[in-house]
Length: 279
Image (cartoon, rainbow, N blue to C red; front, side, top):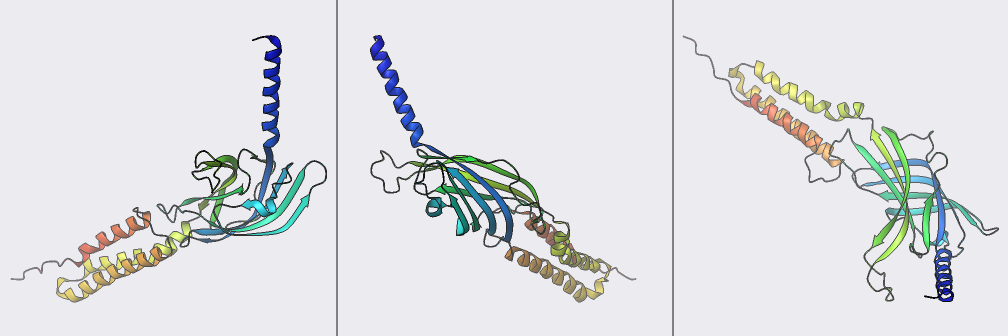
């Protein structure tokens, strides 16, 4: 290959690279969580209030209309401020979202949960838009506290979310699209000391009542049987009350283990003792 041809190829490659670079804009994103409340285990949801800000150059992104929160049940936007002076657009707004998430209840009430929040642009895929996290400063208000919970960590990250569909775009060779996603992950831990005794104290009292049966003479079989059966129903009732506040689970949880052990421990109290023979 002669020198003019090589120079022409390099120029074309440079122009193509520059075109690709100009088409792909970077969006710098930051968040500041002001409140997390209404944690509902039964419905698998919680409510989060936060400030969201973005800085980018492509004015067509229009995040006021194209902002998508994939895991949200409802999204409310307020206090939106846009500054488009110069060659950069700055957007700041407050969001209140009811988020749907999955809960890990295997060690309830000594459980740890991860609350997730993510955003995407519904109109521009990863070929045109890439998120970059703004990691300067705090990401949540240290003055707000989750009652009964301790915040362990708050992490920001970005990734590419792949969808195995073309969303009706026939120009794509295969049904596959990718969108840049910005994610917030908040790890929380339950302060379960008081909650544990509040939920299981009745069960353990029923267990102690059942073992009073061992001090009842075998002549009082009716009293002994009544105490043991009453304790069994008390433990079963306690389990149903706790299960009614938790989402359904196919795995064997700590709650199931404690109630199962207590039920098996109560069963021997209903076994009759032999009446000693008197000659």
